[in-house]
Picture 1 (cartoon, one colour):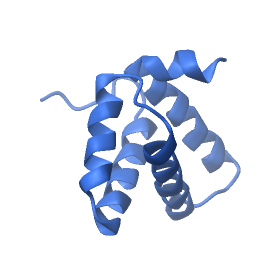
Picture 2: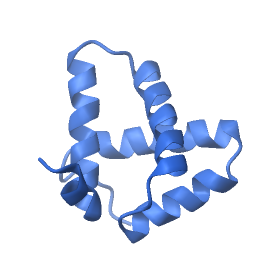
Picture 3: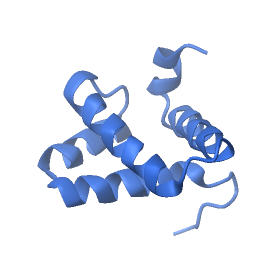
Length: 92
């Protein structure tokens, strides 16, 4: 799977990240460690990768203005979001 292709579509990007979280969980990685890794990945992405879609642009803008605690919250929320199974999204 080409990561450039996956990253241009928000739903594919979430699915890809969700599979990475699921794989880590299957390996026995704790949720706290997964969130910590997501925080580190978020920083690398914000520093080095141009957003490929509007949703990623919003995340990057939020990341840029966030303090460390807020970045941790964003990483936690993204991890939680991508861990949702299809059909489990709450309707608003």
